[in-house]
Image (tube, rainbow, N blue to C red; front, side, top):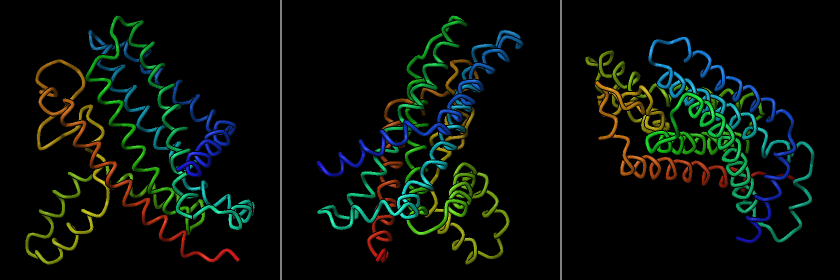
Length: 271
């Protein structure tokens, strides 16, 4: 575990020096501040608008950061041939992949934390704050990013950054549209249950990412929001029990995908 921690810390130090990530972070913070400006134009809904747009911005740019950094995480080590410096050393390949993944997760956690601070400042200016519902929503968004990071790292172990980014983005879009796709499959293949079951099985392999974005989403067929205003009944679904359940699902999915990444990377021949 010491070797994994060393690789993770080294990856974190490398990523925090990447200027492109700071550019993405800048635009994310600008979007959150623009949400505050847009909220001022709404009629008695300024806090709700700031919360929803702010969370949307954190979700969007968190995923962009995960995809951008994740798809190049392993690939650039191969292209720069820096990986060959690790091969003679007593470091297992699984330690290399897991260390890189944890370093990226740490980096994304810090950057999403910075976005959350900007959102908190915008809410304080409006007379609100980051309450329990917002804290749970932010934690779920980070779990979503961890799952997407695992997918990006998986593709990075055997594909180019362009294709890895394309595949990861496609999985993200499908994962966020899971309820709509399941409803489409159920209605479109009523007369062909065999194909419907095949597609349902395929859907079960992909991450159910709509569980992590709880602002204005549909969870178990009911509207969910982080805004304590009727007619939403968010408290029943976005309590800490729900967060624990969704976090467990996200951690399990990320762990399985990371295990596949380790398996693929271990079987590659770099000599």
